[in-house]
Length: 200
Image (cartoon, rainbow, N blue to C red):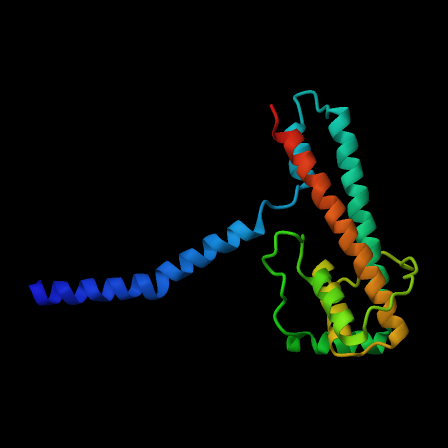
């Protein structure tokens, strides 16, 4: 390889690093930093605490039960939000999900997931600050083809595209605020539980 060819190869490698590889690595590190630690997994903690006898520490077992109750309360609010949408609105909202703008809070460490704060923001922007009590969910059974995020994205789509009445929007705003409060309470509790598990 001649000096000119080596120089050309060096320039090419530098261009690849500074143009593609370097920025991609920087972005990945930045995202991981903002995302913070992953949520506590109930099954992982149970497995970690399991002793030869199969006994789980009572205090931590109570903490796991409380965590499970928090998650159930969140699921109830999610399904209550979905129940505001009738079948026609659900179908239309689902069809328009792809037209939603990018979520603002995707890597915001203050939130477990970015959809709930986006629902609150969209509701205020589209309908104002009016709130109304959101009744308990008539059922906690989700359609088989929808996961937790899918449900919230349909609600966000309905709000963003103004498919709701003023009264429905007020219920959605109240429910989303309550769901966000559940998320933040669980975030604090999981941090405490994580510290308990990690402390020797």
